[in-house]
Image (tube, rainbow, N blue to C red; front, side, top):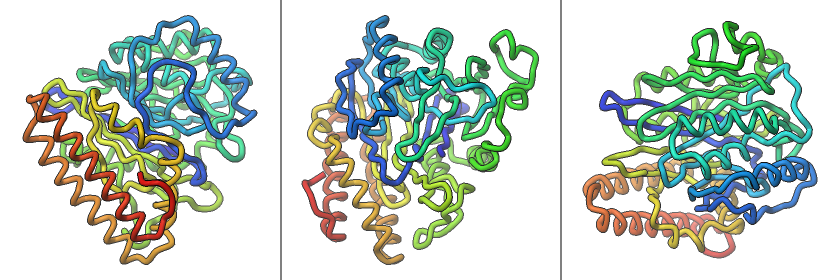
Length: 397
C-alpha cells in the first residue's frame, strides 16, 4: 500500500511526494531511462506476460521523446513514481473497485511510465493516460508475491499544476489540486471534480465505484486522513513533504507496523513495506528530485538528483545495487534499537547537509552539478559505511 502527496505553495510552486510500499522481498530500482522497451527486468514472472504483450502494442504508437528518472519494481517495465526531463511527475496508487479488471489490460505502472516518456505537461499526461485507458483498459496482477488486481489513482504534476486522476475500470474522474491534497489506497474524489467519463458525470465517484470491503483492509481512508492533516501543518518545502512521508506512529527503535502509519514495515496479514520514497520540487525552474532509494526512509538519507548527472548513477542503479540496499535495511531491522536510532539521526543530518549545499548554489548550473555529484558521493559512502558496520556483504553501492 502507498501514499502520494501534492502541494501548491503560496508562491505557486509545486511540491510532489510519494512512498512506494511493496512486498519486502521485492527489489525496487532507481534509474534514468529512455522510452525503450529493452529495460532489464528481473526476475521474469509469467503473470506479467499478458501485460507486457499489451504494452508492446501500445508502445509502438508513440515516439517516447522524453527521458525520465523512475523508481520501479525490478520485474516490471513501468514505474511506481517518476519525473521526466520536462518536469512532469507522476505517482500512482492501487484502488479497489467493483469494476472488472481486464486480464490483458495495462498495469497502472506501465501507463505511468508511458505518460512520462510522451507528455510535456501535467495536463497532457492526464489526457495521455485517459487515452490509454480508453484504448487498452487496465488490469493484470501487480503483486510480486501473491495476487493483487486493482484500478489506479494518480497524482500528476509539473512545475505549475497538480491533478488527481482516479479510475475504476474504464470509469474516471479528474480534479485539479489548488492547495494541497493526497491519495492512498482508497478513492478520494466524491462529487466535486473538474471532469469525468459520461457514465460517472454527476455521480459521487468514490461511492459509485469503490469496493468497500477491499478498501477497508487497505486502511487507505485512514492514511489519507493522516497525510491530509500532516500536509496542512507541514512546512511548504521538500523537507516538509519528506516529514509527511516519514510519519510513523511508533519510535525509531520500534516502528509501528500497522497500516495506519505512512512509512511502514511489513506485518501480517498484509506484508508491505515502504520500499522507496521520492520528493520533487522546482526551485528556480530546476527539476530537483530528492530520492531515498533504500527501504524504510526513516533510516536512510534522501539524495538530491537532477537531470544531467545520469553518468554517476549508471554503475550504481543495477538490480544488485538495489538488492544490497534492501539487505542493508534488513540488517538494520535485525540490529538493536540503538543502532536504528543512530542510523536515523545520521540520515537526517545528511539531509540537512545536502539541503544547505544545494540551496546555496541554485541558479548556478555548474556549481549545482558539482554539488549534486558531491552529495551523491557522500550518500553512497554513507550507505557503504553503514553496510560495512552491519556486516552486509557484496559489491559497493
